Image (cartoon, rainbow over all chains, first blue to last red; front, side, top):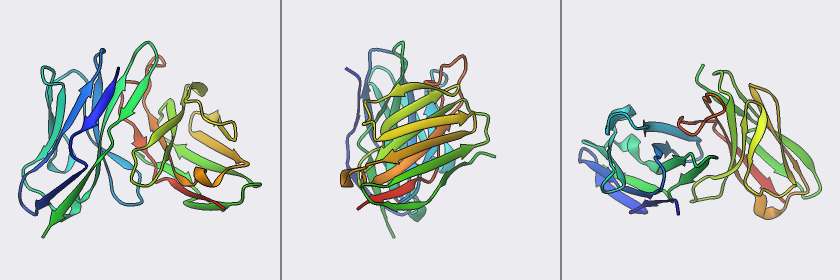
Amino acid sequence: AQSVTQLDSHVSVSEGTPVLLRCNYSSSYSPSLFWYVQHPNKGLQLLLKYTSAATLVKGINGFEAEFKKSETSFHLTKPSAHMSDAAEYFCVVNIRTGGFKTIFGAGTRLFVKA
Amino acid sequence: DTEVTQTPKHLVMGMTNKKSLKCEQHMGHRAMYWYKQKAKKPPELMFVYSYEKLSINESVPSRFSPECPNSSLLNLHLHALQPEDSALYLCASSPAQNRDFGSYEQYFGPGTRLTVT
């Protein structure tokens, strides 16, 4: 069965400290992996994507993620949090199974304290 | 232009009304999507159009009727909705190559906040 698990529903960090949002996936197929961010009452914005090229992916606003096949993980990191990073983050897996399936993680709410 | 636009931003409708949501993109994307998002939940895929043909219908009730009149436009026609259909409705688009859209990132619009009374 295909699934995406975001291991933390909430993460709280202080401004200027590192951010780690964790995502594990389960798939029998080679997935395409994405991180999106959603600010309140807004649509989703792509942060970064992995599609079988480099395993370390750099995205916008200083975010990056590393694809680890052996651990089936795709964790999102940022060296230094900014107040504007406070938002909901979704890990998403697209699977081409002969058809198409997109699976969203449940989301992680990031809080940034001044 | 990397924007997906959605109209209206807000919509309040009664259970007997008929209304439509509209989505537009001018990025040349050939895949377009409708999602439903309830508060504090991830988006749920409803429909996918690829090259203006309906590719995926995730068992959505018939009171939701999608339409893709051309490669830039996507509509969602609403009729006889229930209060539990109140949600944020998101449209997205992505590139597609040879009708394969699974490898590509999606670009989302800001959504239509729908309230059914």
